[in-house]
Amino acid sequence: MTSIHRATIRNFDPATYRADLELTGAPTALLTSVPVATNLPAALLTAGSHVLVLLSPLGNPNECVVLAGLP
Image (cartoon, rainbow, N blue to C red):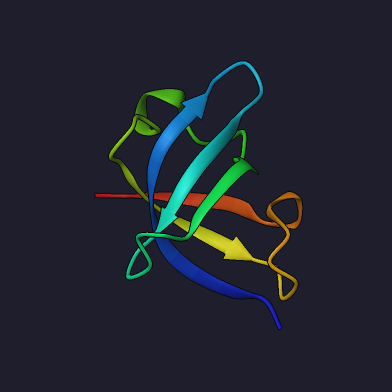
């Protein structure tokens, strides 16, 4: 089953619209090259920004997506 989690952006590549994410509560769980919804402005996706990410049940970063930025 898919689930939505809070994460912190560690790196964002505006050319590919992919991000490296650290899941909240799991500082050793770094997801790399996670696709980001293209409707999110790059200005909101800086390192240290908080986001919501939809995780696949298999944990494959290519089957996850950053859905929204958080304040």
